[in-house]
Amino acid sequence: MNDEGGFVDFFWSQRDKLLEQVGEHAGITLLSLLFAILIGIPAGILIVDRKRAASFVLGVAGILQTIPGIALLGFFIPFLGIGLLPAIVALFLYALLPIIRNTYVGITGINPVEKEAAVAMGMNKQQVLFRVQLPLAMPVIIAGVRTAAVINIGVATLAAYIGAGGLGEFIFGGIAMNNTNMILCGALPAALLAIVADQLLSLLQKTSKKGKRKLIPGSLIIAFCVGLGYGFSETNDNGMVAGFTPEFIGRKDGYLGLKDVYKFKMNSVVISDAVMYRAAYEGKLDVISGYSTDGRLKAFDLKVLEDDRHIFPPYQAALVVRNNITRKYPELITTLNLLSGRINDSVMTELNYHVDYLHESPEKVAGDFLKSSGLLMPPRTGTKGKIRIGSKIFTEQYILTEIYKLLIKGYTELDVETITGLGGTSICFDALINDRIDMYPEYSGTAFLVILKAPENISNKIFTDREAVFNYVKDEFNKQYQLTYLSPIGFNNAYALMMKRKHAEEMGINSISELIDNTSK
Image 1: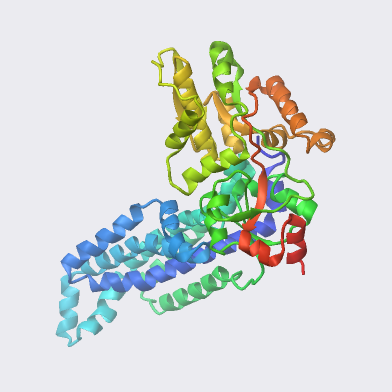
Image 2: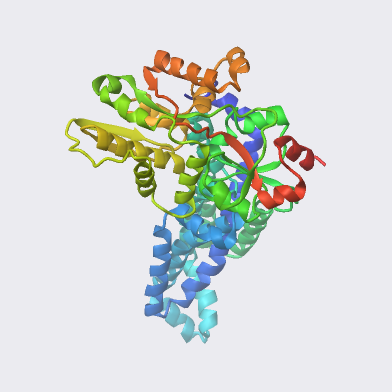
């Protein structure tokens, strides 16, 4: 499933984008690190003679560092929005513990005789601190800064999920599309940045041991200026900003198609699906990619722009099942097809809305739907075998997975294991053909373009024909991969560009072409 071509060729073709992301990554890391130094070192000094305060401050800093990076980033979005600011704040908090702790340990670890000698020479408390304690503790303090720098460079890759840029854009895009070259283009420079930062700070640490301490403030000032320059290099852009998921960025029926067919040139950021819709609603993003049946369309009052040049093919949802499973358990076909034609676009949007906006669980929404449709049955024994159902990492897939789970448990003697959140299309499909899962919901347009990579002569001929695309996918899945593509569920979940409805109406934008014309003025 990897893109063709060697890593060197891919690296060279992406060199401009890569250089930009290295700058963004370095800027985010340097700014957060410098702010952590400005707060962490004074905090460490203040708690030196206060044992209770030391225990509390170090405990709080330790707790902050145990919080998963993506969770910490997500926590700040409602207060700080998306982009650079929440990323810097989150990384700043991550860097505090090693800096505060090493400052405290470095000062308290000094031989008391040194302090007593300074006091005997007539130095006051402030003079003892700045002339004796801090110089002697500086190697330990810089060791803490080294630790914080390496941690922050790694965690900063997550900043791409909230539109802050950096090397995470390559990494998450590569994961979504199972593109090893893309993953390496993000991971290797990030690792190199960590090594370079560690070695530079190591030199600074050795300098502090040799007594050349006047170089340290100067080095920090230079680093701060470099970080400030990189970190805010693109914040003065007053044009419209688009937010796209990592998978959308790398797809022909996504960003690549927008650039090729619509000549799309809007400033864009890579962002997680989890925060993208709210960012559009709050005006942090002007345009986003999304799905035409997403419940957040209703929740955040977003308008789908007409694809007037037809880059998005039909996306009929259907379940893909391994042939050996249908042969082993033939009753599965009848059971799974109970859902065929049952869910249209508006029903799927409503189901998604209940999870995304009303915060009901996918299990509850699935059960309520089957009950209202007269399909819900009590679970049987599940002693005949186990079926593994996979899903991609978005709401609709979770709901469909739960619906199929309830159908199988209610109409057969089979048990079910759900393996959800498998990331992008390529990861899900690879899990299927490598016998890690037995089935998962897929979309005909995605299968047509991303998995099968239909030849151009076929694609041009049937691209917009819903039935032709579905039949092609069904036949080729069986022929090439020994997979059964079941009857369509009933809804068409197409990729789409969308805007906040009020914003679109104010600008008079109804289609993607009108968006392009508006932004090119």
